[in-house]
Length: 155
Image 1 (tube, rainbow, N blue to C red):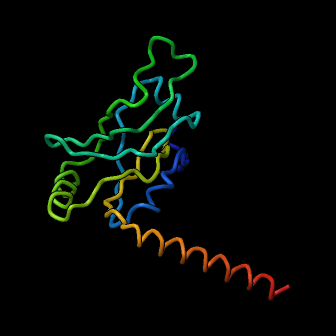
Image 2: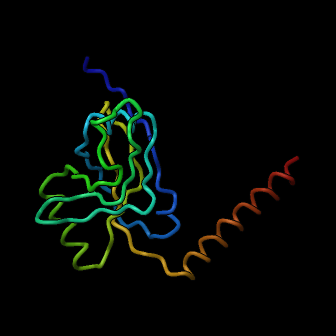
C-alpha cells in the first residue's frame, strides 16, 4: 500500500516558457471532484491561458480546462470553473508578497500525478517583451542549426 508510484506528467503549459521568464517554481495540490480526477487521469486537461490568483489568503487556479468525464453525466461540473489550490500558509504568504512587490504572475507549468494525487507546478514568472520572445526563438534556431551541422560533420 505505501508504495511510491512516482510522478506522471499529464499536461504541460508549453506557451508559458515562450511567454514568461520563470523566476521560481512551487508545487500545489488541487481540490477536485470525482469526475474531474477521472478526466485528468485520461489526460483531458488544458493549461493554456490559465493562471493562479491569491484571494483572501487562499490560492485559486483560473481558466484551467478539464473536459467533462464521459461516464460522469449529472456529476460533471463546469470545465473551466475556478479551482482551489492547496499550499502551506507560509508559501501562500510568500507568493502574495512577491506578486504584489515585484509585479510577478503565477502561472501553471504542468499538471502531474504524484502518488495518485493531482498536483500542479506553479511558477512565479515575469512576462517577456516581444523582443525577448524573438531573441529566444533566434537562440533556439541557432542551437538547432549548430546541432544539425555538428551531426553532419560527425558522419
